[in-house]
Length: 228
Length: 245
Image (tube, rainbow over all chains, first blue to last red; front, side, top):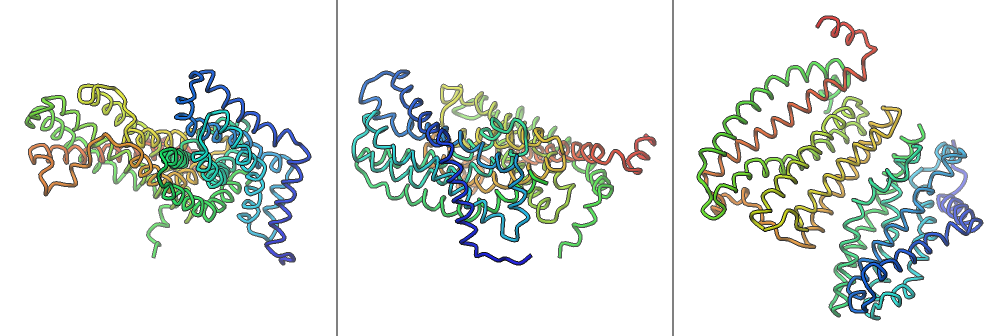
């Protein structure tokens, strides 16, 4: 087959389609944020409301909540397209599947990751995070949540053909999230001591760069296994 | 360049290869295991500080090394399976995975048993313990993904992809965890020239590592043979083989 459109056009088409679908069904965008908010408000109730303790635990709480709430949306990332057959149609186009997948993951991040980043100042307020650590939290979430989307999409691609893929996917993906969690929380901790945390951010950025290059390939081969 | 690999894409040849290799591995395994355990547990001198409780090293260290080794061989099999489309390599991935998971569990349990008298706690959130635990999660992920698929062909490929993703992540996880927190002592065996471990303890440990490696080999080969027979049970050669015995 002949490619009649540029790769950029394909990227935009898939990206726009996914965004449009998400905005038509707004609960998809709002639910992960609500989940995030509820998880965060559970912690002060469970541990106790002392401001010092909360500020100490805040990076961990925010990041664990972020991990869990991105997991929520991941299950739906390929499922609808798989069920109505459009995933197969995307595979038989003469365009590389990894590009399509990249667009889908990017749209997923805009829908689930970006709102978290934008809402962070509010969460920081709830958890008594100081302004220094707030900035670090913003940066780590900005670099870390796309990374979570890319790694998670591999798990979503592997389990999309399965009936009860949801819980299995979290088992596969959560261990792979550990490095992100470690570096992100360490950056926030370092910033709370007013030290330089650019090293941790650089490592997060490096991991994101590797994920952008290699994850779409892994995701597309996973999807091929699931669809065939 | 890789032509020698192709005959083993045929299940029958791979089965025969397993049969030829199995006796060698069994002999090495039994011999080194008897020598290593008796030497290590009975004859090696007791540690001046840890007394006899250090002897768990002869099980703990080999199983920890082999847990990583088994994962890397599983990943190599997965790469072979995906690159050359050799289905027997997928079977090898599945043959190794439970063995690796068990040996990782052995490393964790013996480590906990050793940690109790030495550090005063069954479990500490130390870097090596944590990365070993994550390794166990990765093994279990591969296994549960394989068993979740109805279609075993797709299952083998999916498990192979996950094994490769895991092996790329493993060094990242290892170093990130190491950087995060370290209580465990550093590597002692590789620093032989600095006399970090006495030769009277080093050599039985080496023998035990060989024994564990051969043991993993034996169990994997037996499992691989079973997997091949199960996958190819409709083929004439399998029927012939089974009616012969």
